[in-house]
Image 1 (cartoon, rainbow, N blue to C red):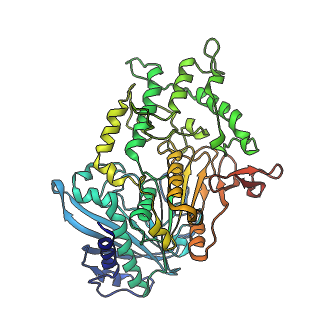
Image 2: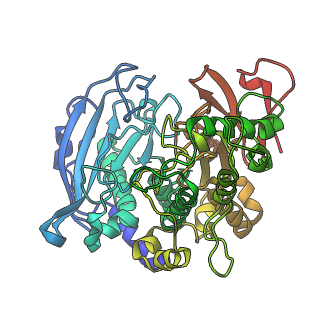
Image 3: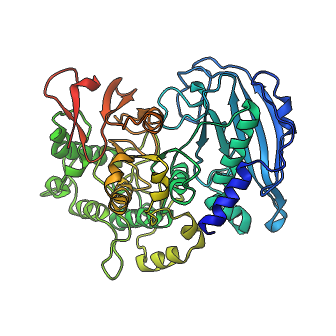
Length: 524
């Protein structure tokens, strides 16, 4: 779709052609929202609108295994609907399901909440990702979410892709259509449009955020993209390659299948040795590798000189470990996907997604694999020929001049212990986009690496509680570029530390309470 056609398409929907009677007053009576109708270019049906009463702090959870929200939620109208509802492949019903939260005390802003996995689930529109302890809804944002164009009882059901429309909705259509419908609903409900719009997401939501900046540059003013699932075909090759590398030398169970190569004691040894080499590079020995780029851990130094003991690894284990942390290459020697950095979470089995050394799975979420070999060239060829990979790949397009020309601002974040998508891939995109967009990149983009954090959240001894929504709003609306971002951890003991814009890192000042953020300074 050319830029002129795309602009006309977006403008037509934003104008709300065919909009019926609207609800104007926020409050317990949300029934008027049911009369909203948008007929073109997407058929939109409002299926429900109900008042959700305020919720006290500590009574709402945003996902399994996550602590309850510390912030109270305001009362709000929750509008639900479907875009382009139809019967598709195999007689299955399809349509882009959406939900929009319209708070009673609106702050004039709209936030699109990114999805996760393969979508298929309509998550409550709260805007909690990368928002610290205070979700966007609690701050007065109107918040929109979508199921991505299909419905599923699990997050990784790929059967929807048999339908062309559903595949396109997941890959690129559901986010902009839902956003434009939400903009129209918000304007009708409050009697005025949102003065600024934002998108925040991680994993699939991070990909959707990058998609917005790259392919729909007029849609949002501020973007926060976490651990983007921008090259899943290639990241899956790498995690499969790592598993096969470990399986080749792993002990075998009675059925001849590979068992775990590293025992819990082995993994603890690896982490201890890694910390001995890399922990104090940030000026403090505290179990956190904040300067991951300078970490040069060499497993050979803990190799057994004789028989295996608890204090060493066998030569086979060392060789597999070395190979697993080198980037896989094709037959021509080209890197297929970046390596994963040495970090404490690589050997962790909780909380969150297991680290890449807790082997026995082909990807961090399964299925279990006993493979001892991966045909890298065949897998690369298949990934390059895969239509869904081509549609969802947001790694290639780096020219963001339209987004930047209108004052757009974008923040990335990524955990350095992410076992699914290498943080070095996100770093590589950030660097390439910087070269493409020139000097103004420094005035428009930031990247924050989170030591010890796994995929989007979780990890041992990691500071994964942080708010990037406030900095992007301050940047967009007041021109205050973010620098240090406060981050918090709950375990093993509560503590605070700054996240630093890459390539700087938080260095201990040499004195002061190590549990307090002011004892650290961002150093390059």
